[in-house]
Image (tube, rainbow, N blue to C red; front, top):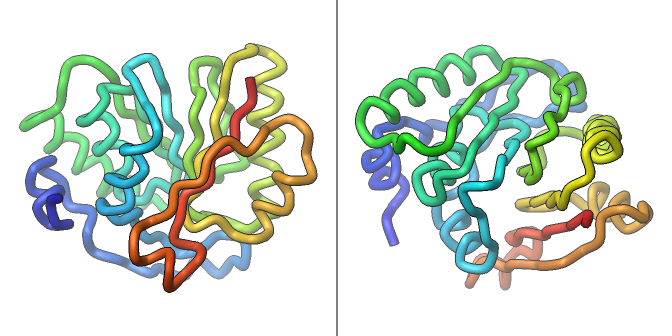
Amino acid sequence: MLKEYQYDKMLHINTRSKQMEVNNSIHYHPYEPTPYTALEELFKHYEVNDQDTIVDFGCGKGRLNFFIHYMFHANCVGIDMNQHFLDEAMKNEKSYFRNVGKNKGSIHFHCCLAEKYEIQPDENKFYFFNPFSIQVFMKVFDNIMLSYEKTKREMDLIFYYPSDDYQYFLETQLSFQFIKEITLPILYEKNPYERFVIYRLT
């Protein structure tokens, strides 16, 4: 198990600093990267391959994107409304591909509001680390469903530290079904939010 700074060093990126910027909105939450230890645990129990395209909403400096691309050669898309973080993500992208990036799979970043992003027909996995309010999530969810209606495919929603609002909403809709919970050893015993939950539409 590598430590946080060791992963960043291996990937030739910098995602460790936590800049809690105020955006004057109750709907968008401060950025914080998913711990590498949590990502290790997730992918012990959840499969990603080079045919997948993962969208990270609230990607910040791109940690999840680089980790998944490096480990699984999947295509990755990062969405964030904060231009400063996207600038950092694109610096990381240049350094990553210059030093360790594989030829297979791509990484793209987009600076926009999550609910304004148009879901592409090849995108099939969507990642959320509590990036915004339930009101915004419901709009994003509608966009995902609209994309599914246009192009039917299996799609997963992956949540780290899932909020009660998100889970309640997902339990009341009929499309995505709960398929898996992955708890983080030790941390979950002290905090029941230290887990991943995954929903699937087939």
